[in-house]
Image (cartoon, rainbow, N blue to C red; front, side):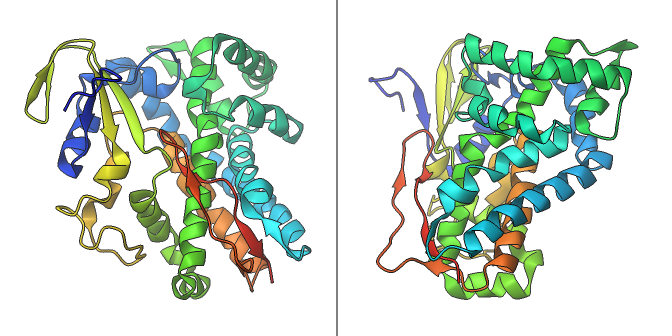
Length: 339
């Protein structure tokens, strides 16, 4: 269906959204230099560099850095009678995870958070230049003295016998730093809201933390941070049975697809044991990025720290979360009693 107000073609059914996100001819709209904006062999080559690094030596740095930051934030909250998890936890932890994975100095965390506040795919030219200025001194150091972090992996990598340019490295790093922006913070906030609304499931995660990845996936299905994902047709393409010309904008309504009753039983219910195997499909498309992996790891390590440091975590009396936003959506405030 075409939306007359925006000129975009709307796709809302689960099967159609999954198919659209997997179509090579539907690309991420410019501007941008992140991994998601790369195409063809270039995309595959750069993705092949980044994904294994998140499972190798850089993963240990990521886990340690994220856990350390999460425990620091959680212990500060534990000393409070009442706290806002969004302002005091969710907005800070994703940046700390990205900084840890890339091996950036901790003093750069506040600056990176400001740059990533709205996600790097939406950065304007000025903010993109600020990001480059922040990263380039680190690139020079990594090229001269590489370490075990992901930035070192990128700075020492070669494609077709040639090292990656500084512009390419900062673009790929932006893929991960984008995971430190608003989307990951909102996704983490929605996860916490869902669990606090279901104290029985929250208590179960305390006993069985290995269930946390499933709880995160179910929260993304029910309450994704990005409710609308935009794609542009690089060439003529057929979407949901409708032929579209090159240049057509397709709006994938992920929030609607995740609650499609034709695909999910009781779609409005939050259930960490939901057996629907398709719940991961929105992140499995052609333009899925390692930033999604980083977001999932951040949520897992962050929730583990909260559950450990705040054994009596519950809603503040009389508080109810209120999700806000259209393209990105989630609670902006989570008032809780830590203990």
